[in-house]
Amino acid sequence: MSFFIGNIEIKGRVILAPMAGVTSFSYRKFMKPFGCALTYTEMISDCGLNYGNKRTLQMCYSNGEDAPLGLQLFGGTKETLLKAMDVLEENNINYDILDLNLACPVPKVTKNNGGSKRLLDQNELFDMVSAVVKKSKKPVSAKIRLGYESVNVYDTCKTLEKAGVSFIMVHARTKKELYYGTPHFEEIKDLKNIIKIPFAVSGNIFTVHDALKALEITKADAVLVARGGEGNPLLIKNINAALNGEEYEETTFEKQKKFLFEFIDLLVEEKEERHALPILKGEAPKFFNMFNGQKIRELKQKITENCSSISEIKKLINEFDYKN
Ligand SMILES: Cc1cc2nc3c(=O)[nH]c(=O)nc-3n(C[C@H](O)[C@H](O)[C@H](O)COP(=O)(O)O)c2cc1C
Image 1 (cartoon, rainbow, N blue to C red):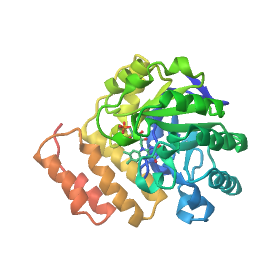
Image 2: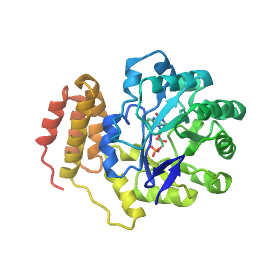
Image 3: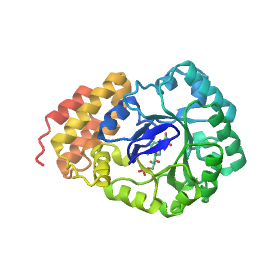
């Protein structure tokens, strides 16, 4: 099944969610072949781009291997967002969809009126988003929450559609709920009748069943895989398999090791070791979360606490003897 975001055809229903500190180019490139119909960058600061911050610009990098790609901006004001769009253009940044982060609950972002704070004032939201849509040469998407403290998701979606947004991703929690508790998919069960543009749903997608349930309740066009995909790329493959009536692929320790080593290769291609190592200490143990027992617990702990280089992490895993 496919659907369109503006003029971009999205050939599938599983999307790699934006995640700060996680969905770098190498992570997207690693996850893409498992069946991501669309990938998103982590949130990128409009002010960082406007100040010419080199690392912010590096976060925008793609050579198209992760396409179709949504580049997500978070911002202070309409003016700073519009200016950041000029910076993207001046630097020939490669992306397919411009996304606005209207979901982030982090105080550093909301205190500057960014992220989920935008959900509070529908007039300002309309003014900002319609200016971005007008300026953008690419389709614009938006990632939202059910609301800031109380739920106003239908009003927000209507505002965004009126402002010209082509796609909405709803994290089915309010800002107040951060990342905890059961997502409230039932709050958007009628969204298909409220807006005409496609939308996707996000929240606690850790199993194939979670994804199918979220799609069934919300009738969304697509589902976002976020934390559940970390260390478990087969989740994306198996959600696709379930949607297409195909067989699931089971994992093994050897497979997980192979996936991790593939990810490591891409990560070190993208980043210097001093930047790659802390990322890996966070991500590598997640590749073994599906295995139980004391030995596995010790392996994960050693990766995080004892390893001071990537080669040490690889050696530790290579020497680990696991019987599936
Ligand atoms: C570490 C982390 C970083 C995130 N960063 C972003 C981000 O940059 N932009 C965004 O829109 N959402 C971000 N999110 C939210 C996810 O995209 C997703 O909506 C949320 O985690 C709910 O999905 P899950 O419960 O399946 O993980 C982040 C979530 C996590 C856990």
